[in-house]
Image 1: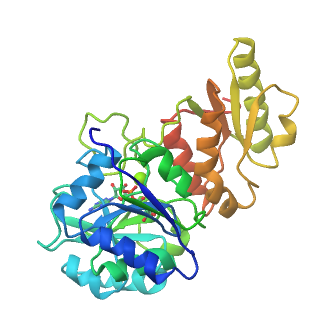
Image 2: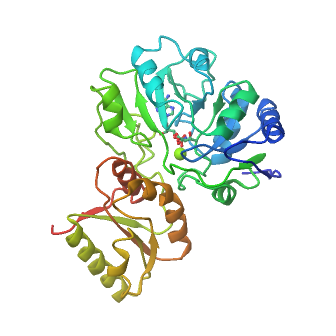
Length: 356
Ligand code: TXA
Ligand code: MG
């Protein structure tokens, strides 16, 4: 990264965004600049989706590999037809049910879409976010907005403006600070260009809800360990959010997994290592007698709360300076499948099963 730029921060009302703030941010977008803004999932790093140079700046600021395509955000259904051709009926059915909301649809792109946005593919990913600031910004800009999560590549997605600044201060023009995001994990990504359609990334909409509209939707998590080999689909890199201390996910039934976490922690402590636990609220009392750093993620029984806190918890635990991190497998029910996906990626695939 060479030239540092001045990153401005403007506070915006997340429910009723001030028109003059939005106008200022939209002017930056139209001029080809970079604006981080809140969505209902995570903060996005926005630029005009129709401006190849502006999109290139996103890749540069994030240090994102050019092989990973970016989602175009729209505020109006008509913008879907600007970006995409031969939009299948299933896209309209899903859009009717879930937009605006945490769902991204991969469809065939039109030539107007810059090649770098799609990483050279014949497709484009489109989402209509459910956040007043995001919708107002897109509308005022007059163009779809390209926006990956506003983190540096391989860092947890940002759920506050402070997280954005931690990763991107000096690299982007503006941050709209609209407080914490509500959902906390990214959108679900559905590829409608293949038959049957496939869930590429579990996210804010559960697979059960998606299958109510699209019963044939398939999902088989496949993770790819290295950056070197060709990815079967973009976004499948295992090392996606790697905390700076190695994380291990401990699976198995609740009591056995908790006991295994205690045993792993004790063994590491005996070896002179500092241990952190990303703990569900229910589990924390069973760990307080050990000299471990505990960051609570919320109640296991309430995955909506855990999702909201997950990325902040990952950032918080690595800041404690521990040598290794342990977390219990959240299971695969509803939104827990999404939480599990993010934890397994943060763990670079390290899962141990208690009792085995
Ligand atoms: O909730 C979200 O989706 C957030 C907010 C800002 O909208 N955005 C986000 O963007 O998470 P990003 O770039 O961090 O993740 C986008 C995912 C990646 O896994 C990418 O590979 C996939 O979507 N993707 C984008 N375009 C695609 C395409 N044309 N085909 C297949 N996958 C695509
Ligand atoms: Mg991301």
